[in-house]
Length: 104
Image 1: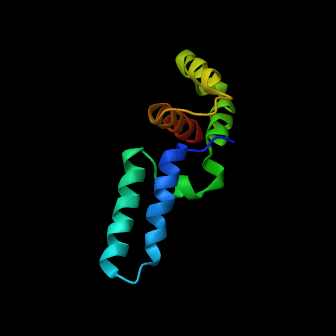
Image 2: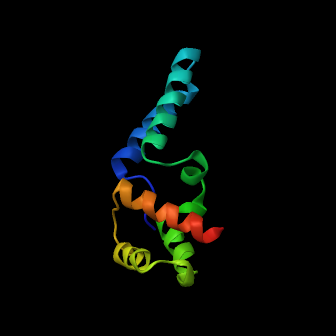
Image 3: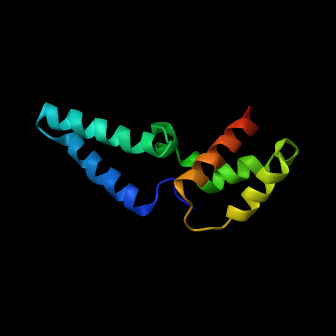
């Protein structure tokens, strides 16, 4: 299973989220804003990160479940990234866009 966040971003998010338990209101608020900014900068939402159903492998499966809705380029793109250990943020965003369109 390939994660939506690369290991460095996931580690950074985990460190930031560790501040959610701070005794200081301002520190908690800043940490929450930083975490949200980190996700948004990668085109992700909280439900996508928290939900086990939105792994890269699941997004690929969703997209491939409706090959009739894929363009030739999209089909080639998905086949090309399948099985890779690490994807770029741009690749993940494109995959997410394709999967969301297919779900409609």
